[in-house]
Image (cartoon, rainbow, N blue to C red; front, side, top):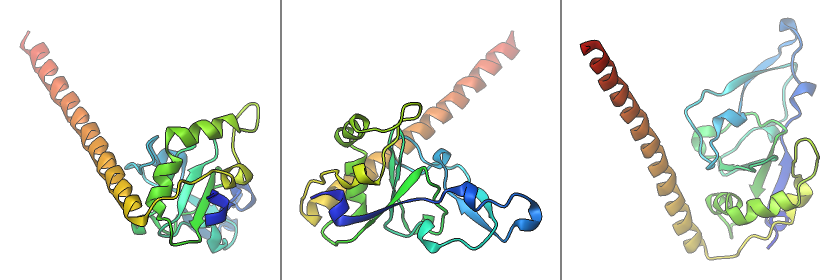
Length: 192
């Protein structure tokens, strides 16, 4: 099936249109998801969310909900699944919001599938723009999504979840080893 047949796809908010230019124009402040909040594997990192000062109330369609899928519209087309801990975040226009319309698919499976090398290569082939290559809703809608059982989708989602946890732990281990190495180096230097 095509992604456009199983999901609603829309762009995030063009921020400049709603940004308060000066302090007295600020009507509402929102938490904003940015590129720095997501790593290249489609996992949220520990970066704080930025704030966005709006000149008015914004449409709820531009905010994340549990089960949404966000895809970055430029290379490397990273996709992330929104869980209940990351709802209510303002989505800017450099992401598309994908909302599943069917219960034949789970968001975690679609996220995994869109993050696959095969899909990313397809998106690179069909990119638009010359200085900054991007994709769009029309191209995203045409992506073929492999149909498999919900049970198989859940297995894939669990494997992906374990993979991302392992990557996070390995990254933390490397950071701790680096601190350990620096500590030993500093002690050795002080001894001489």
